[in-house]
Image (cartoon, rainbow, N blue to C red):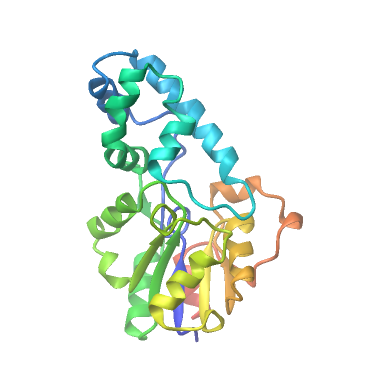
Length: 238
């Protein structure tokens, strides 16, 4: 039995349908912030192109995380009118939250049952997730009534590093006061989660495939110890 189980957020604890455009609420908030200096369509295009550029940057191997302000400066507002840029800068935390939030988030099947079973067995739990806004993830977990079950939640925007940098996992195991070898890690990405787990010398690396997993070449990344379909699969292992 593991002493603790670490979970990725997106694709493991929660998932949402693919989002091809920025949330309308975010576009409206930015439109109002910049006093209509750009049209909603221009704002939408900046966010869409910025998200693609940020995703490409995130595919680097040992990345540090960018501060929220730098994400916006580098990928979204760099070519906006000077006054519009100045109006966005004081609100980067709020608009980052809106950009990260997904109205369609739902806990994945079996996750409530798995979290309950781990709690009953006295197995500690933590969240280790790459995100532009850890605050959005925390609020969702609290909204679903499970946030309090986690001893710690490690998010890249707060940690300053991203998976596959093993420091993400070590931040969690340090907070748990456990060696990584005594812990399991559950993720949905071979290139980020499983590679991160191997680099951190985790006890057992579990892959829970999601929609994004299909875009990875299994031969290009370390194999997981186990593949589970959802939270019920984790329960079977336990």
